[in-house]
Amino acid sequence: MGYRVAVVGATGNVGREMLNILAEREFPLDEVAALASGRSQGDIIDFGDTDKTLKVQNLEHFDFAGWDMALFAAGSGPTAIHAPRAAAAGCVVIDNSSLYRMEPDVPLIVPEVNPDAIDGYKARNIIANPNCSTAQMVVALKPLHDAAGIRRVIVSTYQSVSGAGKAGMDELFEQTRAVFVGDQKTHAKFTKQIAFNVIPHIDSFVGPESGYDGYTKEELKMAQETNKILDPDIRVSATCVRVPVFVGHSEAISVEFDQPISVARAQSLLREAPGIMLIDKREDGGYVTPIECVGDYATFVSRVRKDPTVEHGLTLWCVSDNLRKGAALNAVQIAELLGRRHLKKG
Image (cartoon, rainbow, N blue to C red):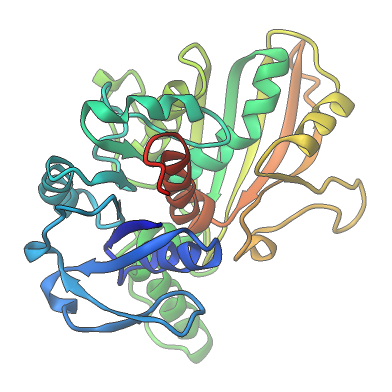
């Protein structure tokens, strides 16, 4: 006996990836529905690499009664309207937008990091999926924090254009083509040219009332979400940068600990931690780059080394497929966790 699962925003990058992962992981399904706006109603989309196809249904008219879970990848606007409607109908919402992440009565979950927090979902029947850059970082930090206690994190991200959706990917492609054929380069999705460039600006800037004056919302999310998921006492400073990579986020993370921890001990912990693949050879190519992580479930960690500028410090390199662990995979893992702990079938 399986679950009835709706994927909201099924025609977008993350929604399609959710369907792929549900199929790949053989999630126990009795029925799956692909939902999107009325513009996509009637379109036919694939259910992963299976022979099964799905006809897209109109989210506006969909009745969530009798459905077990809804994986939302529709953005904050549609989610604000339809997630409460689904939750009220008894369908548990797993939301990928930023809308509910910092709500105190909505659990913010990374299954490898804080699985017990999912027990709070019944307050509103909604579970939040974290920001893509936060998700991979807290997976890498969790075993280190448990061992030595993290005091402070300085992180610089190198985020792919797929984090900005299909429009971001299209803009990188068109600008790159324009460079080689001599056409005019225009930009609409990003504030400056992204092809052959990097942009130290993701999302809008926040004001002094946030306590992070001069930072962007993306940078603020990394701090606040890490505190909610991992530990409220960890101090986080992030610089989030968009880079001309189609898929795969990278992060350079410097960590200050309360207790001493050696490089060898950190490597051992990371090697054994769930969801992490340690590839750390001090030789040419002995590390993972974003192009190598595409399509993989793991969060890759490389270049673990001592930070000599603080008493107890390490620096590491972290790479993950942002459409997977940063979004779709984490949502499906939450669904699996929810099923095991609360919605058992059969």
